[in-house]
Image (tube, rainbow, N blue to C red; front, side, top):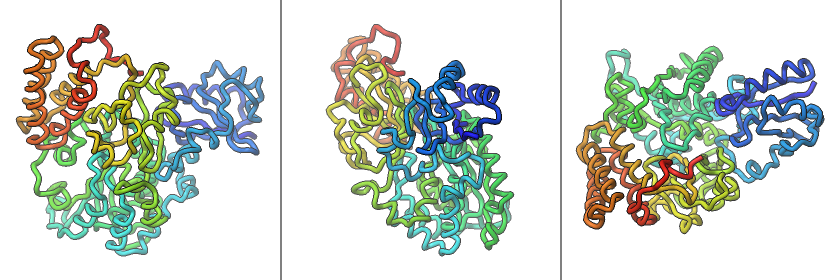
Length: 525
């Protein structure tokens, strides 16, 4: 019997993985052992079928059911040659050059098989954490240099220390002095999908990370605030939590210890602002998702007024490895104050879209050309937007900038959640500038005037500039508006919405003065 591997990730499912699996089973029956695994993160090759051979796994992709006759004729089950064969998967340059720490298990595990998770080193971080004091766990995370991967890049260990040191007041609703771990899984930035990959493809990793955070801070309850548009991830997480409860990893007396932790999933309501931590907490409490003024910090008065850790999925999923191998091991990757690895997500007009996990310090040019293979259209790349819809547009002149928090900030950019959206030379960046303000106006919670009114006025001013109406005066007015939003908005949505506009003014200013003849945003695939 030959073992085959095919992803059950939603990306693979969306392009026919289930249909391919059914066809393989119908035609080959007991000749094969078809395992539905996590994805490799090489999305342009999905559905990617892998065949186990004595030399290693041989890959074929992207496949359709129509390819099966020729594949079988080419001796598929023995890794035979075929135009869609990519050779040994582990040796593919896209994978071989990566430094996967957080995503080391991708392609190897079945998402809901606990034995697979343990075989890949899963639960080792938790086992070690159970032998340490809370302060020792926090110190290990501090030592790693891990910074929040959701966009703010705040040191994770410092946040955990604040919650550990906080005295939780008695809460009548929970009948105890409770602290919370809240996972921000409302992944809404354009071009991002790494959170989804963790939740769909390795859900126990997130559960283990939240458990370690609970041990470190004394929290006894946790919530995963999940993007409503991720139904597959929702189903997987619910099943994973049930399995973890049955095996003693969640609930009372974790693995026979005196620790307890209860975890639930809560669905978001589709508002981008709820990715901001205080708006998220409002939504989680059943209120309208509006930003809270700070202080108090959520670490001191967060969910239901109790001390709360709010961390992004990738931040929490990075913790099991840090506890397993030590903070110094993780810290040795990266450069400067940007330690560890960053899962970058390649999207837009790019030939080889997917996940690239590398240590901080790689250049944008390496990511775009060595991993991404250039634009999908074959045309020159004009710009990339990094960090979601509020990120700056970076021109080719800065493609040799190392990817780390400080280096990108020095050129007006940001790492954000690691999403990289690529545009070729047909893209109308003047239109994208208008879109940035339109997005902010639509998604603003409305609490502060600079964001609510400023984004609407900026749309109007941009339209006048695009029509050639008093362009110079309106450009000065646009600059003033952007400065006001940046300095006076209550949260990052209003404060960062000017970033893409200002970068286009700085690097592609001539495009603000011409209205594209094509209706498309241009250059996105």
